[in-house]
Length: 281
Image 1: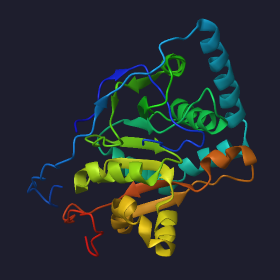
Image 2 (image 1 turned 90 degrees about the horizontal axis):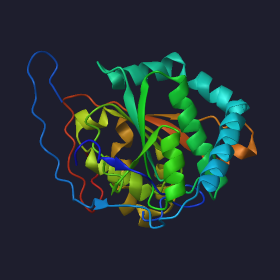
Image 3 (image 1 turned 30 degrees about the horizontal axis):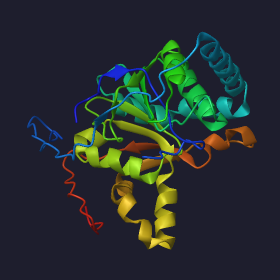
């Protein structure tokens, strides 16, 4: 799949933010990476509702402004901003950026910002991050349940809404921050499958559910391995830093979330992950 699927107005998923559908060698010698064969499941998309009104858009925008201020004034936000500016995390970010000055943000599975609080909190944090950090570039958003009203408000906030349902299969041809709190495991697995190559994985920063928690869960319930096979296989190459949610109940929208950085040596050989999880990579 190519970089970005070009964009329209948007729509969104469920209450908790879950998705309901949903390298060169050291030295001078350059290595040619094989092309990934990704099952094409992209579908053109547009909101199913066609009606909106200025009053409804204005009401939602006002609500989001209140939520952004609420997040910005919270101990959670202050702690998170401090965490993002620690030498440990900044080193990881600059490594992903490489020679680029910005990384784009792709938000998958945000949910209905008009209907539910967790999506509003999550979107508020994403927009505040862009306003705070110069290294965050354009924001693209997709969720199949987003309404026309939500699409227009998102665009007014400076976001672009995808016109194609990528099923999470965006290839990170350039540095990309995937913002995916509380998405389903299948969506993370789709993302990893689409980027199952050393140079692509090294372009990714992932804000989402803890991979460590997935690993612990699978150890207790082996029947869910299939939907998490790439998550489990990539664990040895992930530097995971837990998002500190402090003690504010409002920020349950970010519980068990982590920043994930992928650090693979250019000479690493990633083996294809079949229907059965490989024991070795």
